[in-house]
Amino acid sequence: MNDSIFLFGIRIDRINRKFAVEKISEWLHAEEKPCKYVVTPNVDHIVRLDTSTEFKNTYEHASLVLTDGRPLILASRLLGSPLPETVPGSDLVPLLFTHIAETWNRPVGVFLLGAGPGIAERAEDRIQKTWSNVKIVGTYSPPFGFEQNAKECTEICDRISHVNTELLVIGLGSPKQELWIEKYAPLLPVKVALCVGATIDFLAGEKKRAPKWIQSIGLEWLHRMLSEPRRLAGRYAKDAIIFPRLFFREWKLSRKSSNIARL
Image 1 (spheres, one colour):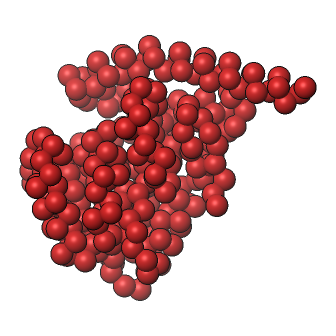
Image 2: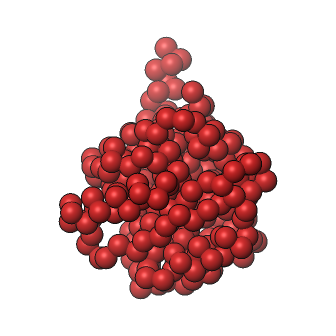
């Protein structure tokens, strides 16, 4: 079992990027196909998880919970249970593809689900040119509101199932992607599903990630907000108000636990 901590009401696996890639690769090598899915909490997820039982349920059933966001790393250190490093989906997927290209002796079937029309196809072209053994077996950009249509969702599962998908990369945005995979994982004969937000857009070159130096100082969120202010400014403003309250509550709980342990 992986080393993990309980923080903000959820389990977070205390592993680094290298181990996460190796663990997912191990699952892809396995014969069994109960779909294991991976989630990557950031501050916005933590805020949502505090009030959404349905969203929290997706985290309880996830096979890996990997930290996406420097604020969570800092919070874990201040609370005395340090997480090693961030493992955002936008880094995890390229690292996994590189691992497959360098160590696998056969192709791995990958399906890209999400992003806008035509974007996954552009991502496919780049992926096929960059990573050997990563075989894109299908792409699909579902229509707006598809998650409310059971027939559409079943057809999506059929699309994924009929092309020998082993790895499903989901870029539907949160919490839609987590809620969808938790509900439909039993219908998917895939080995691993990764809930990775805008990663397909990044792979396609549709969106640009922050420069490395901005990532290194933990301000990638600011770069993204300035890139998409209409979509993200309100969300980040709300998170900036609520997350400190959640941290303070967590700090009080940790102090109380420490005092009880001393008795």
